[in-house]
Length: 412
Image 1 (tube, rainbow, N blue to C red):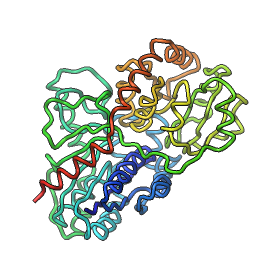
Image 2 (image 1 turned 120 degrees about the vertical axis):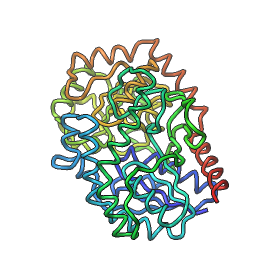
Image 3 (image 1 turned 30 degrees about the vertical axis):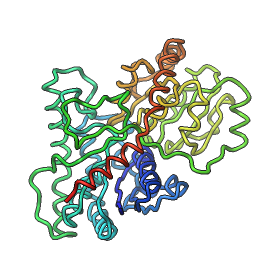
C-alpha cells in the first residue's frame, strides 16, 4: 500500500512520525512524508522519502514569529490556538495543493497536528481513508482533562467536556481558512462542524497514559514511535567526554526559541554547580562561548542513543523527549514552555520520575537546585529505571503498523 503522511511543526512533532514511516517501509509499504524543511534530517538518514511543506517553523518560534510570545511568556489554550492557526492560515492552500498532488496515487492519508484539517479535507476529496496520528491524547475521555489545559484535577464528567471544548476552540480557530482552501483547491463545500469519530493512533506509552476505558476501538494508544539512528556514529570527542567521568546531566530544550536565553542559561549553570553537563542548544540560538568548562556542547544526537548514557535529562517536556528520557530509565526535570508540555510534565511527576514542574519564566537557580536534588535521590533513580524497563517492552511502531494494516483491511 502507499501512504501519504502529513505533519507540520518542530523536530518533536516530526521525528516520531519518521519512525512510523520507517516502520511502514520495513513492512513493505510505500510512504511519502510531508513536514517542515527544518525537521527532515532524520528522514533522509533513515531513507524515508520526504518533501518540505510551505512555511518556516524555525521562524515561527523565533523572535518575531507566530509562536514567539508563547515561547517568551507562555499562554493559555486560546492564545495557543490563535498562534498555531496563524501558521496554518498562511500555508493551508499550499499544503492542500501539495497533498492532493501526492495523494492521488495513495491508498490513505495519515496526518498529524496542525495539518489535520488539510489531511482530512484532501482524504474526503479523494475518497480515500484518513487516519490521525497523535502525540498527545486529544480524543474525549473521562479519564483526564484535555492536555492543552493546565493539569488540574477536576470531576470525570468535566474531563470529557474539556476535550470537546478545546477541540471546538481549535476548529473555530482554523475553520475559516480551511473552508476557503477547500473551495479554492478542491472545489469542496464548506464544513460547519469539525470531523469526528475517525481513527486516531497515538504514539505514546500506556505506562504514561493508559488506554482510556471509554474510548472506542478506533482510538488506540500504541506506544512511543522512535526514529532510531540509522547509521549514525557518535563523534570521537563525544565518546571521549562520556568515558572520561560520571554520566553527565543532559540539558536541552529542543525546538524552543525566542525565550530569555541568558536568564535561563545562567539559572542552569548555577544550579548544576559544576557537574558534568551535555548541552544541546537546539533552535534556541544559545552561544556556546557563554558556557563554562563543565559544559560539553553537542549537535543533533539521537536521544535514544544518548539518554541512557546520562544521569538526568533536563528538558522542555515535549512528547518525544519525555518518552525517550523515560524509556532510557533516567529521571527528568521538565521546564515547560507551552502546549502539551505541561501535560507531560505532570505525567512524569505522577510516575515519580520527575519533580513537579516550574514554568520556564518562573524558575531560578535555587528552585532548580532543589529539583536536581530530588531527581538524584536513589528512590527516583530506582523508579526511573523500572519505568524504562517496562517501556522497553513496548514496540509502538510495530503496534501502529499492525493497526494501520487492520484499518485498511476493514475500509470499503
